[in-house]
Image (cartoon, rainbow, N blue to C red; front, side, top):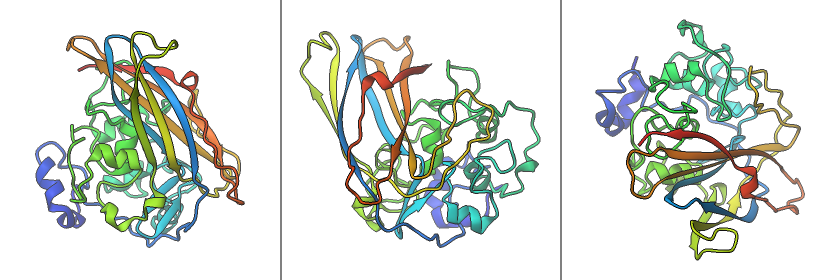
Length: 315
């Protein structure tokens, strides 16, 4: 199933050839996308109290309607991991996360199914979780099933949720958070934090088009007397003008948004300080952030109350 494109990223193939032979590790998208060169970047400050006995493992804020590239910012209206220009060029439906109904379009593209994702004939539940991943996606990616509550959150237990691994082109079924496939001195954890790609050097991307967040561990506060107290300073969160989108997926959660509303996902994973038998815990939220054409409204509000428990992951 590996295409000739794989030769471009031989290092990636060498790292995963035994377990991931089906996946197009060196997939380079077919389009020279029409990009948005400017964005309305948001800033803000938020706080998170980690319960006693746990410590912060990872924290991400991601705009699902944005893809960064060396050309600028690309719009991803349906938040499926392919830009609108890439979908137009390859024949996908940019107004449908799963053009062939079962598997996310970006996964279809990466596995070389292309738009003919009807080839994926296994029986699976198409209802997507709050992370935008469904059972069909997990089967296509060959991630372990039913080993954790909220399966599909972080299947390989490397700290990066599956949906972000799909977006940054890393592997949801291989613990690869410290890998640096594009040799830009940014490992996959950093790529996920920045909203960049593991297959494109960040040296080619304008820093203004990347997510910039500072994490600061503070002393305890009255609202967090016994656990770790963290401040997250969002210094740059790009937003883009985007058409309205109606999510047709069978799910309790919807990725629908109005015109110029960007879908922003926050993910927190905490792990036990000492016990290896206890599970790690995850929290998540999704909120709509409006792009301001006049670039006046730059506020982004992050509140711990928005984050809800989303599952547990075995260590």
